[in-house]
Amino acid sequence: MDISNLIIENISNPHELEILYRKDPKGFKKSFSHVWEQNPDSKVLGVWHERLNFKETANTEKSSLLQEGFLFMGILAVLAGISTRIIFHFVEQEAIAPINLAFGIIPFIAAFFVYNNTPKKSIIYCLLVLFLISGFYLNTLPLNYKDSIILVYLHLPIFLWVLVGLAFTGNEYSKGSSRLAYIKFNVEYCILYASMAVSGMVLAALTMQLFSFVGLDIEDFYFSNVVLFGAAALAIVAAYLVSMNLKLAKNITPYIAKIFSPLVLVTLLVYLITVIWVGKNPFLDRNFLIAFNGILLGVLVVTIFSIIESDADEKKSISDYINFALIVLALIIDSVALSAIVFRLSSYGITPNRIAVLGVNILIWANLIWIMLSYLRFLQNKSGPATIQDAVTKYLPVYGLWAAFVTFTFPILFK
Image (tube, rainbow, N blue to C red):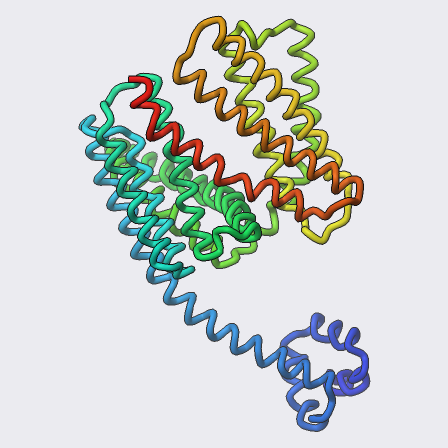
């Protein structure tokens, strides 16, 4: 039967019209114009007319923005590649610290978000000043590997990550939904960048192998000039693709969250039981305490990953109970780690590493308590999933402030 006739037959049945559209969108649009001319007074067809025409207009506008954004992204990608290569030259000369390579990429990602969001001038000036101060401050520090300097190298990227978050959220930096969108962006960005990076590594390996067949060793040149440039430029390209709502990462992240949460829970339980069985002691074994903290951070990341991928309107599921169990387990791990750190401080004295680890463990412990209480209220039907997400998003600036504190004060406090 002709689609036009089917549309007319179901003119008062929106559900069937939706089915017809989904079966053959092109055929539906083509036949709809004729039906609309014959039935201009139908409210149902009027809604469909606006829907179809609006989509065409939106696509045109999106296409225009896509081209404009693509050009700007291309410029930023080239600038990031060139900047990273120049910085790497000075790193090779041991004139500056390797962490400076972050300034060849991160400010350009922030610039891309500023271009997309057009925040207030005060936010733009704030970002510009903080990036300049960070870069200048970093390069006034001595080029050595004292504990306080290494802590700067570890915490500065976290501070810069928070600055990128400010650029991403723009004028809506105080809204939990904007911060949640930034965390989701990071997850999708990592997945997409890793996927493209693997392809790039395969291409690099193949290229170097082909040149080796003709007796040319281009490994050093290729890494310094092509791989490094490509890795930096790819960081901007990945940010652009994720911001354009690329479906690859968006479709896969919820499944990764649901698969990894139970696997991490089971693995961690087995590991902790084994640790108790063999008698490992984080109070006395420094390396084991470091590993213990690494496990804690891993569990926190997986838990947050699972929380942000849950639908705010979704009802309770088995995943929520798994997440709650992970949070409780993380709290147990963090409590043990905190006890061990306090023990080591009282027994062996104060060092920058111990203070830094103590600080971050206290922050994580407080965050986990907040998330756990929010989850408990949700599981008792006293609140919705949005409360749990708020416990994640509203705490993000605290990590940024701690990273800034360690970065800018530890080299002074622990000379």
